[in-house]
Length: 634
Ligand code: ADP
Image (cartoon, rainbow, N blue to C red; front, side, top):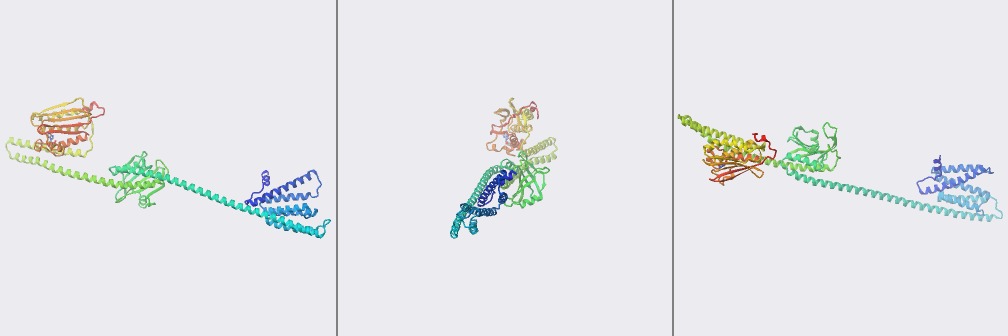
């Protein structure tokens, strides 16, 4: 109720300022009239005053209430007309009672008020219509009412004419004022609208500029990021360039892609030449380490079709926004796939997804993966060519080696075989048992020589194929003594002095027991073989810095300066006649050198023809705790 009353007391709100002004004016006039009438009627009723027109007051109250109601319903013009006409009627009624024209001041002022109200409320049309109405009503009243005292017909006509002129002037001025006012108001409204429009345009422009500036900032930031990633890509490709094999390239490429290029899980698949099966799979694990799988799988046909005809041919990268990332797991996410090509066609594809980190998709990843794929294609074909070249060189070397071996072997085999054949023939011919024994001895010697040759060739070829040798701590002195004893007989026959000088405090050697035995016995055998009777051979062990040294010195025939650089070559014999005589194969030092290399040691030789030769071998000591049992382990 109170809210309804408050709304009724408030002037109505209208869209147009001009109408709002009129409505506000009418509202307050009507409210004032209503209040005045209400007070008057209430006073009459409360104080019991005599009034013949109480019912008229009641009607007026209801009428004004209805008009206010109409005003709130936005019937502004209608209320204006009714109110102005009612006002005019009231003034005419009063004029009928009290007299008309400017001769009666009340009537004159009241008529002027009617004109002003009508003009303000109804506009300049209201001013014209009510001026005409007022003039017409004044004429009628003058005609109906009796002549006032002292007035002739002529003076009344003159007064009426004067009234009409004054009412016309008042009507004109009020009408004109209202007209000018409404014009000024609408002009102000127009300019206000214009300003508001300009303002809105300006605001829209500012918002657009801010949007563009923001977009530019974002793009600049993205460009910076892209630039940074491209620099990283460059350094990654330089690092990958240093790798030797295609396998190492693929593994490292995925690990660096994860570590430096910001990809989450990376995988790379290589396919066979017919593009039917996946031959090798490289995939990074949660820690970013690459795992290689060689089990063959069929290529999914739909993936193959998409790889051959990618949805975005300009990048060639397949983009899956939301797919299952791991078989049998509910883990979903985005995945990028890009085909890898070589000169034969499709060779595989590379993928990146967000299985582990679940990081949001970055559109830049498409560009980076595309560039990375191109880099990998280039490096892969380069590595492949390099690898093929290396394999070719190795193959060529092997063929040369085999040729050399075959030619050396055929010669070395043929000699003892022809001696054996010859001796066999003579053995059958001779009846003399002494000569038969001689020939049998020759056959035995040559057979041993053949056996040794074959053993050395096998040993050499075994060592050539091996890259490493099993090593553990070995006490060098312990294996020297039994070897010395093995040569004691030969030395005795040749009347040679074989001396051992073993330093007891030398550390364990990190080595292979059999390999070390072979080194010592080869060097000792050569020293004995190439030292004439009554000569001497000395074998020493000692410590030189951190190294354990083995030294074999003889007072033998020595090696000429020209031969020294070649003595470690296979089948090289400085003194061929003596070597053959002693049963040498020409492989002893080659085997020794290979074994020393495998022990990460060093072998050096110094020699003077006619004076003797010294071989020095340095071994790496074992830094591991040196168990007592290691000394006795073979
Ligand atoms: P071989 O079976 O002929 O002894 P090696 O490979 O053991 O073959 O030695 C290569 C050559 O080096 C020998 O033929 C020999 O001429 C020379 N040589 C090796 N050790 C000695 C040495 N202690 N004194 C002189 N010459 C040596």
